[in-house]
Image (cartoon, rainbow, N blue to C red; front, side, top):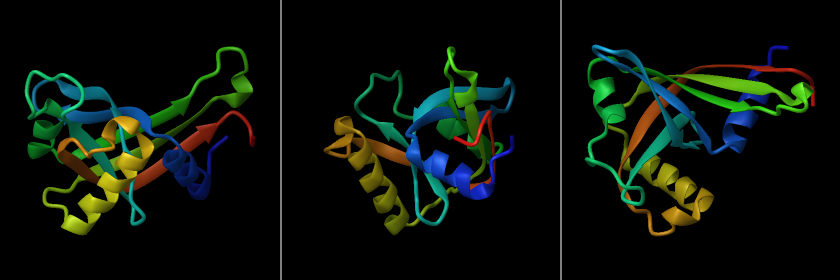
Amino acid sequence: MRLNEEASWLRLREHLHGVLCTLHPERGPDPQPVVYAVSEDGHLGIPIDRVKPKASSRLQRERNPESDPRAALLVENWDPDDWSRLWWVRAGLEHVGAPGRPLLEELSDQLQAGFPQYIDKPFHRILVCRIVRLSGWAASDE
């Protein structure tokens, strides 16, 4: 059954991990598992951190929006034993090229609160997108 907007927002805000899909100019869809935070005004922040090893501090998920600002985040719950607990929420996103300092601070604070690894806010940057669409589905009301 389709989730209403309120239920979709609730599930998106309660979770911290999903799959971000940006659009690579040649390959097309470019999915990546990410952690995220959601601001009060409907922006999504994805950290580019110094915690996990990387080949470069400038990641493809940051370069892709330069050619196409559209993206999506998929958050889901899978239970192989109880399919009545299945659900997903999809957020349609639009990249924000120059987010303001207050928004970055709000998202940084949320990421710090959600992950002990981020206690010192070890971010190169935070990729910011505005949530432009939200949809969801659940196998049951619960």
